Image (tube, rainbow, N blue to C red):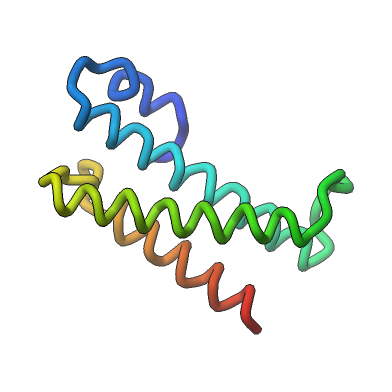
Length: 106
């Protein structure tokens, strides 16, 4: 899933597992966009000046990474398959989280 629009049908489903997957995919998409913005900030390529300080945005990204981990744990316990049709959503989320955590502690 590449954009929030692709999660709409899941988001309005009567099936809680579909709504859960929508929440997860939306979070991964938003986390990826925040991380991309932070990378542009670091490289001086950001096209605007953020009103929030970097510390708050770093905290938001860390919390989002933790939330992704919580949803992945719940999904495993509840038997919810999170991967998209290509089978790589969880792997992509793990790559995003690992890269963020590596960058934030260097």
